[in-house]
Image (cartoon, rainbow, N blue to C red):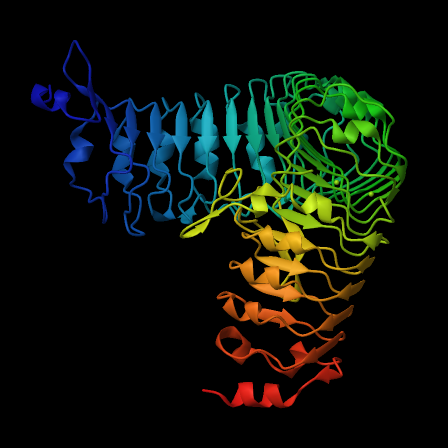
Amino acid sequence: MEDKECCSWDGVECDKTTGHVIGLDLGCSWLFGPIHSNSSLFFLRHLRRLNLAGNDFNHSLLPSEFGKFKSLTHLNLSYSGFSGQIPYEISQLSSLVSLDLAFNWQLIEMPVWKRVVDNLTQLRELVLDYTNMYSIRPYSLMNLSSYLTTLSLIGCSLQGKLEDNILCLPSLQTLNLGWNWQLEGSLPMSNWSSSLKFLDLSYTSLSGELPDSIGYLKSLKYLYLRSCNFMGSIPASLGNLTQITYLYLSYNNFTGSIPASLGNLTQITYLDLSNNNFSGVLSSSLLNMPMLSELHLEHNQLVGPLPNSVSGLLNLTLLYLNSNFLNGTLPSWLFSLPSLVTLLLVDNQLSGEIGEFKSNSLEYLDLSGNPKTKFPFPNLRILDLSTNMFSGPLPGKYFKYLKAMTNVEEGGVKLYYMGEEYYQDSLKVTIKGQYIELERIQTFLTTIDFSKNSFKGEIPKIIGRLKSLKGLNFSHNNLTGYIPSSFGNLTNLEWLDLSSNKLTGEIPTQLVDLPWLEVLNLSQNQLTGHIPTGKQFNTFGNDSYTGNLGIMWISIVKNMQQP
């Protein structure tokens, strides 16, 4: 019997009858250095649950003395910095129900793996993510415990052919084999484990077509098959997965039309079919999912007009339809989505007027790369209409509605809407003259890009009210008149591109007072007079002004000579 005083300590659990320590939770306890074989830990022979996760044992070997815990049912050594071979004594813990050795990068399963499979017949949870299983072949997984409910082998260098039997373990609910790039094979034609709720085979080399039998997984809630080599049409039987909430099939080689049966997935919140070769017309049933929050159909070969009417979509926050071959006019329902935050229609062939959006939460709208399509968006912070065929004057009356680009307070931008620190998805945008992809978009980024259109007339003075703007690009249009002196109010502006227009008059001296301006391009206009001096203007070279025959170039020379 152990000293009962310790039973009151944090992380210690004792048997109420015998006083034996049966549970020890030292997870994330800042332990450092090796566990020696004579450690008092190994005198706790009655332990049933042991958690040492989230400590740093400094790449030391896993002691064989762990095999002394004959009553152990739960062992968690994840994120703990062990290395070397797993001692075979671990395989003698025949009462183990849960074993978690994940994120011990240098921990090697061989040669104890076969003993683990053969002896730990009571296992219900086995987690070996990001350990070293390079020498282990998938066929050795076939004899795992029939009680196993969770098997997670993420990123453990597993290679070879995936055997059907792994997907047929009778009690299996969670299977995660993702990020094993050398894992090959195809999905079974039958005999799936009907209890599966979570299946992730993403970032593997699995190939072939999705079998109709995948529709038998009626309990499935999460299906991740992203970035594999699957091909062919996706089966209509996917519409039978009525419990599913997350479905990722992106970055494969799927072809054919998207089956209308997916409209039966009434519980789905996230659907990603992007970056495939889907073709055909978009079915209205796909846009009638009441719980759907995000829909990714970008980078496919979808054609035809968008459906004229949809129902539901009350929870849709993100809609990506960019880089397809969609045509026709923008349907009215597109402007009636009450929760919409992000809408991407880039690189299609859409046309028509842009209606008034009912969503007050719209923050990012990108229609670039479409023909002429005619906007009050109070929460927009990124507005990209570049590379279209828009013409006529700049819509000055709409700029006053861009409240998220207007509000500032001392010490920085006060955003009209404050969401999370980053949006979830990436986008491509021109920043400081460079066309780049932002993997994660900071919410304080506020930009307007109307470049490469046929806008004409004067630049509206009201733009000077958009005091939180970081970037403004009106290049490659037919704009005339003066550069508004109100631009001197854009004190957060970092890049300004008005090049390749027909602007006249002098450069406003008020621009000198823009403290953060890094990139200025006024080239290829009809500007005249002296170039302002001082502050940021002393850093701009000739290329900021080339093509303006009326500019007094002596000013540039003087500016560049100033210390």
